Image (cartoon, rainbow, N blue to C red; front, side, top):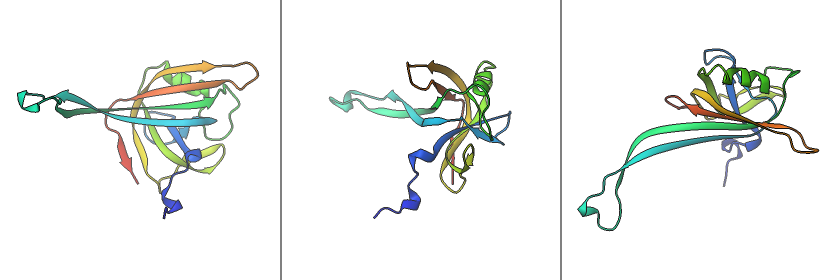
Length: 155
């Protein structure tokens, strides 16, 4: 039987981004509707005549990226969150930011990382932002980040 305390509810999983140049004061992207983390392992082929009809591979290096979709918000965000404008300002500086993929705790809109659950943390650069404004629907923003080193996991 599943222990509900061990399952992270998708509605609380968020991407937190540093408001400064350290991993202190990580803030959630305001009005997040989804969050994603992907970790990849590159490979190199090691096939030889002994491999027969199948290729052999070995792992080489890891890379990772995160993304989040948010409702677009340019100003007036209350609490300890980052607006679309705040994130865009970080994007155009091309600087590394500290990020965490974690479940949230606290109350809206001032969510914080829940350190009692597993969270993934590292440095990344914001590689793209896209904006969407469909007729009679809320505008949204998609933020993509590329890891620039180790992705740590903590609990």
